[in-house]
Every structure is written in C-alpha cells, then in structure tokens.
Length: 294
Image (cartoon, rainbow, N blue to C red; front, top):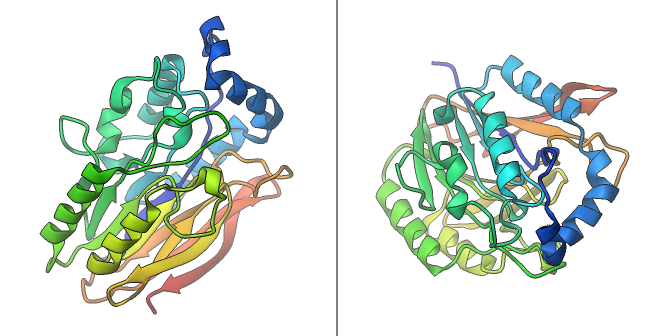
C-alpha cells in the first residue's frame, strides 16, 4: 500500500471582508490588530495562498491539517468568509482545523466555540477539544490553544479540562498501531516564540506527552519554519512548524511554505518522511526532504 500523505499548512490570515470591523471595534483589542494589519497585511497575499493550495492538491495528499489563524480580528464576518473558503477545499472530513489566537482575539461578538467551523474541528456533532479523528494509519489529536487575551498579548492556553481529556484519549490509543499526531496552534517547545506569544500551560502539556508519547506535533503561530523536539517516553518527540501560508516573503517573516508528511502503511515502520515545499520565484517548489525516526 502507498504511504498516507498528510499536508500541514498554517496561518493563512485570510483578507478581512468589507465591513469586517465596525465602529464598536474601536474600543476593543480589534482596533490594535487593525493598526497592525495595515502594516503587515500586504505581506499576506491571496494569490500566494491560492498557489499553495493548488500545490497541495497537485501532490495528492490524503488529509490536510491547518493550525490556525484563518482570521485577523475574529469577527462574525471573518468567520463566515473563512467558512466559505474552507468549503472550497473539499470534504470537511479531509481537513482538520486547529484554531489560532487571531481566531479568538476577543470574547465579544466572536462566534461561540468556533461554531461556523464545526465540521473541520472534529467528527462529533458537538465541539469539544481535544477532538480525535482516525484517518488511515493516523490518530489526529486536535487541540485548541486559542483564547482571548489582553492587548499586546498573543498567548494560548489549553486548560485543565482539555489536558485531562488529552490524557484519556492517549490512554485509549495505547497498544494500537495508529500514529499519533497532535495539531495545535501554539508551539509546545520552549524558546520558539517569545513569552507574550507562548502557550501558558506548555509545561503541563509536555509532562503529559513525556509520559504517554505521540509520534509528531504540528503547530503554527511563529510564522517561521521550525524544527524542535520535546521529551517523550522513548525518545524525543519531533515538533514541526511552518510559516504563514499566504506570506509573500520579503517582510519580517519567511515566505509561504507547507509540509507534505508521509507515513508508511506498515504499522511497524515508524519513520515519517517530511518534504518541505515553499514559494520560490513566485511558484511552489520542493525545498528539501528529510526523515524523522530513521
């Protein structure tokens, strides 16, 4: 059997639709984000994102993971626009979305618990994190680190309830041949982002994973290509991040990039092949490949 192919992209930062912000937003954190968007918005281009999605399709991936920040201000209009964009990507069962901090920028007016995106968050009728989705040889464990924060902060938090459910899910997967892949917006590794952008309970998450283990963690948020690791029960757990999927490059962050991850059909083969594909001279091309667990 051919290997199972998982695409990972992140932080598309879709352009806000007309009327996304109202006068009431001037009294909230959204006003600060609007000022920041005027400065860095041109770095995020719809044509770059469209080219990346076309490249994902051309590579014949079986499933896609998007690790957050579809929106910029978490307004209802942006949620609706993001839902329309998600619907263009195919069957919701073939895409898993982990919300980002920009998707929960403020509590007021934000759609309750990401309701417009329910089909892409997990398989259950209700929205609950972590969401477990079994696809081919994979157990995709979708965490949500997105929370409203004070101005100038972009931190995340999982919370005690979500961490407890994560432990239960990992217990239920023990002894099965599925490759366990965690998707989350904020990186769990230390030093990848600054303190004001970090995962507040990352130490608690790392402690759980050090006991139970997973095969791979995918994140966004940093807007850079990141390779790190955290301790696992039988060796380091690889942690991979990608730049923004709409970044044209030339600004503060790296140009758009995504990863094609291959998992062998043989459950005894725990290797993961990673191919990085990025924006080069206006088109997406292979940047290199390596194998995890070799």
